[in-house]
Image (tube, rainbow, N blue to C red; front, top):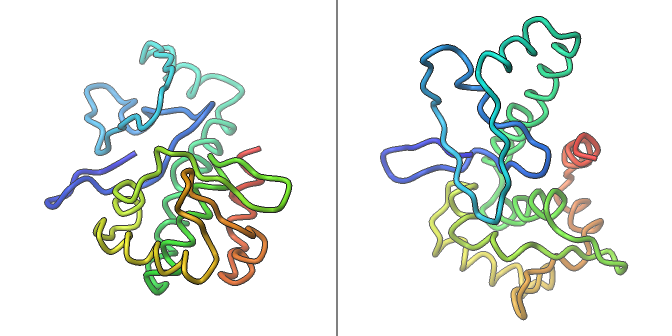
Length: 179
């Protein structure tokens, strides 16, 4: 999910399996302030606007939809914004942890593999950093032994140690809400 800026699109958050898109343009003739770009193969289901409005307004699940909206849009954006004060190498590492927990694959040794579609460019747009800056800091993190960049896919070696180093308790909450 991204919002166009003067420079380029800035990725606000990533949507994944079972996420709901389009809440920001549910009202009649509303234009969404954001856009979505698929970075992997997706299947979307489209529902009639009035059906969705009736479900949200008159259904017993109204509270659930509001909570779901918070979990899928507001909370991830707040988490992303909380990274802004970190030094750039830590910011990139924290961004990798977030995408690895949500979309990556946990290995038996405690490492995580990050899907191929999370490129330097995508990570840069997510963290508001230039791709070249991301590349430099990824190499630095690799030299420190925290990640591997090749062979692909990228790998975070010891997720628990990295999270403790970053003091990333909030991502534990984020992971639990996505299960």
